[in-house]
Length: 455
Ligand code: F0G
Image (cartoon, rainbow, N blue to C red):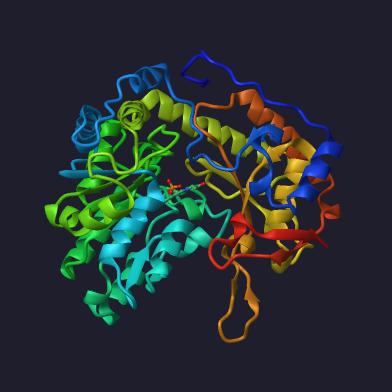
């Protein structure tokens, strides 16, 4: 038995729409769900980012915001909480994760560099490539098999990293980045052993280890549940241990910070702050607010205290797991085991009659909205498909997934049951679903703005 470890104090109505209305809205936005008005979405699983419900304590903390331009008390509180939680000595707020990426990579990454990772998130990859460097994914091979069970399917492949380090001039690798949990790999966790092994290997080459910590608490929960020797350790202890191997952290606090906005950069050594300070002030803000209001810093400081609560994490983990098994029971193929923040549907397996470059994932995304007003996101060839420089032909992604990202503390178990019902109906008519073609796209991160036409 498990249930939401909170009760509801403030509610927000959600609007029902008709099938015909949704058909109309879909045509209006050229089948790109990023352009649907949120008002016309019933269940919004587009992202778990910035969509959390804040607690009463967080709302209370907003009033405490010290809006001084420099050296505010809210900044001091924020730094105290983050340092305590991560063990990092220097903490710099930013307005969100990709600002942390842009600022760090602007100073630390140059043309021709290689940044290895388990898997880079898409904004991370784009910010690296924008510098003229390569973002290299070295996740373990089994991560590519959607139904292969592995407790830490988000791990980096140490052997592959070894080979890279042996054959590359280490000056070309300014840092290695581990994403925990591994978002682009279905939110799969990374083990503490893997983090420790990565650090040990990098140390031989004097290469710093950074952690993209957007979902660090969910990752820590999986370590506690699945990794030998951690069952009796507290979540805050596991969190400190996993960060102890890192030289720095890139954080989007819009996930495991329970924030609607926010992020930070944190470092063990001062040299990193010295490196980024100028560009930070030029583009983000003075180092004591970094693009955030004092009240945001207050809400985040409180959020970080709440997210490491074990009752919350247990409910979060078990509710996602149950959501996944309910979907399986109505025939929907999912990535297993279920990760930390979302259930991923394998659209390639569900819709084998739609070729990759006709975007089976997008077809399912559109159908989920059409049938149930549910908004999700394609993580497949729309997001990762690329035009080959030489052949000028589009190359598909190796997976065609649809992410049902569950916002934190927002939807109840019955909302999840509704989604399972809608997917059960889609399963029955799956053979009638058709593919799409892209009629307009941008150079970077095309999935946000692409326009589609049904085939
Ligand atoms: N790193 C990871 C692992 C992420 O999942 C995200 C964002 C970012 C960095 C960038 O952070 O949005 O604050 O700028 N992920 C969101 C998502 C957008 O929907 O998965 P941001």
